[in-house]
Amino acid sequence: MSAHQQLHRRLGTFDATVIGLGSMLGAGVFVVFSPAAALAGNLLVLSVVIAGAVAYCNAVASAALAAKYPTSGGTYVYGRKQLGEWPGFLAGWSFVTGKTASCAAMALTFGSYVAGAYAVPVAIAAVVALTAVNLLGITRTALLTRVLLCVVLATLVFVAVAAIVGRHPSADGPLAGSSGGPGGVLPAAGLLFFAFAGYARIATLGEEVKDPSRSIPRAILAALAGAFTIYLALALLLLNHLPGGELAATQTPLLEAVLQSRLAAGAPLVQAGAAAACLGALLALITGVGRTTLAMARERDLPRPLARVGGKHTVPYAAELAVAAVVILLLLTTDVMTVVGFSSFGVLLYYAVANASAYTLASHPGYAPKWLNAVGFVACLLLAFTLPAASVLTMTAVLAAGVAGRWLVLRLRAGTASDA
Image (tube, rainbow, N blue to C red; front, side):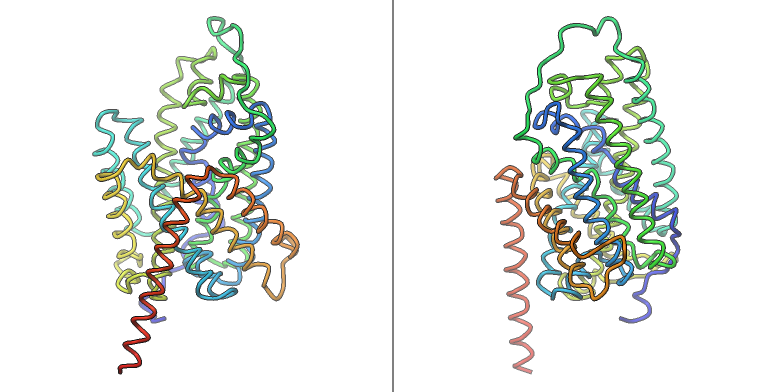
């Protein structure tokens, strides 16, 4: 790899932790509890614990691998190094396709919160603005993520206080029954798992972290511990405040918790916090997808021009601009809120490859024993195949298209080489 393609190490442990936590406390925290409660009912807390346990398996595998391979690309790179080119490609393609769709959904969620009927143009403006921030360098990305994370944390504290002080007298009445049960615990855990998946962003930024063998594991585990504590506390408070079917019936559970409380006047603060969460998650997503795109282009699994790095702040500008262009295209041409369901299956497959890669390491750090990698691999596949069939089939088709495309390109390259 030529020197001009290298990114610079500018992130410390704290900044890396902030980026990971900002990803995990994105817009999902404002919406994920409702569909999870619809599946698991009053067993929602058990789903959170299972999701957190699977996330821990994946996090320690990612931490061990990122410490050994501190370069951009995350599991795409780890899969190639430890398992071979095809598993690496499968992980990278799953991540890039699934998370690009998630970027579009996150942008549209932001637009819906702040502009209503003008959601799409506002979403596009957000993508353009955040891409511009990324092009100013990774330290600017970390700074904006830190600001947005403070807003989100303040909002979550306010929601927690609203739930603790209790329901407004006018909201008292018969409580709706739960619609979920034991059979929905694993599917709910599959949904909740993605609330914890932001630590992948730390691994994909491995080339830009100072002292990576020390900083990356610490940042990943700290971000996961913080997110797990917050999600578990919110699940307990929400179940107590909006029991059973009430929690499952609303599309905005945290906003509903405030509206049903004695602090209902603070509802606009929750809306502002949700908008900030969308921006924080979108910023981290664009950054992570751009770095994985960069890594795949370096290995010619995506067009080589996407590997260009440069500018005053040494950023992968070609990959960043390409990701932004595809996200904007999705916003203009598709109903992005319906096409992102398949990304759940893709991300679980991505982490299955991460666990398999970590399992093959010659030595394992104390926080990531070999048996835990095996548990993480099986758990990822188990959660993946409990997802709705439509999501599984859609992502399988996308993966098959990528595999077929790569196979055809390799055949063409081999033919060209033999002719030469």
